[in-house]
Amino acid sequence: MRLINLPFKDIAKGAVLKHCLFVTMAGVAIAAGFVTPGVAQPKMSTSYSYYSVSGGSLAEIHRSIVSQGPMLNGTRSYGITMASPGKQMSVASCKASGRYRLAVNISIKLPRIASSGQLSAAEVGQWNRFSSFVRKHEEKHRAIWGSCAADYERKFMAGETGNCENAHSRAMSLWHQMVASCMPRQIAFDAAQRNALKSHPFMKYASR
Image: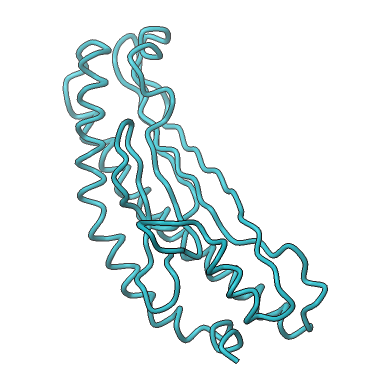
């Protein structure tokens, strides 16, 4: 989620993929087993991290976000979500376990206020509403990723198993296809949320 008056943004990182893509969200991961001798059960993985913001008013907190929020393509964001293939998606792991396991690890970074001691009860309430809004926004991006990853899994499972090297190569190729095909949905969601962000009570308080 990028700062006000700018579209929200997400990032997706592939194995060696450093292309900034995906949108802000918490994690959802989908894994699929493959390659003889068996098929692993689907695996899901999500992690959250936080950056600290501070201030004696909502306006100061917003300025803190502007200066401390995570960077994305040169722009500060309220929160970001990164998606990457699971660590088990490797030839070595496949050979060790006898199966190739897909996994999508999603990590979300959100703002967390260092101290609310200087804020009034009304300001604390507005901050809590806004931080919840940011979190829900990111988790919607996660849900979109989950849908895209489910399709990724189906395509992988529909192909021939092959050996570990072939399975890994095909998994990486399908990963890049998934990221590219999922982007329009993520961008459309950000665009649809722009007015909700601009009209959020926190923004009105912060502009006073």
